[in-house]
Image (cartoon, rainbow, N blue to C red; front, side, top):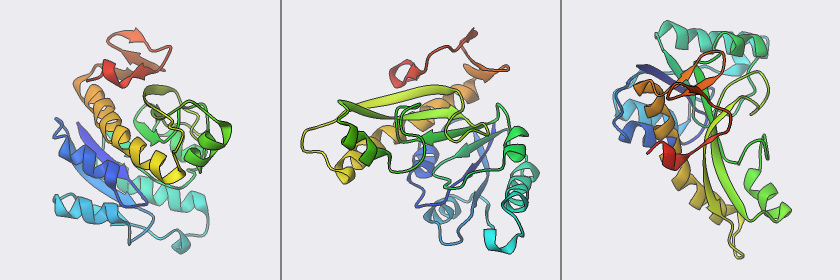
Length: 208
């Protein structure tokens, strides 16, 4: 399976995906920031990279079309959003229905968008987690396929919660990509796992 990834930050989820040595071929890593650490992570593994500056395009849609066009040109079967911090044009997303996934640091549908760790602590939640979902035009609103959970400790801060959760993200994303690569997890107008429609998110333990 040919995989492309988009990332805006340091690329720790991308690094975990590469380190998992799944039966996939990385064809491109793209970013909206030339300084993104993810590009260096990719280059160190010999993966082609591209960085486009949103300011070079007249509209957000023009930028999205250009970047996603590069992904399409690379021949990707699956697009992984691994810390890509931009809202994507609905029309551009529609072209990738069932072929794009995103990892998000909350137990969706809770806490879509930013500052998920802070919001979890402010709400007094007993647990926190990460989700992988298929990408749709709705921000962090596509069908959730799998989640990993951690308890919230009394002494947790945003930083400590983020650090502990990142460990689970690094397990969850490769597990989901591996399930897609093996054919266990598919898109047939909706998520299907082992031949049955997926009605509730899988726990990470069901993928390992």
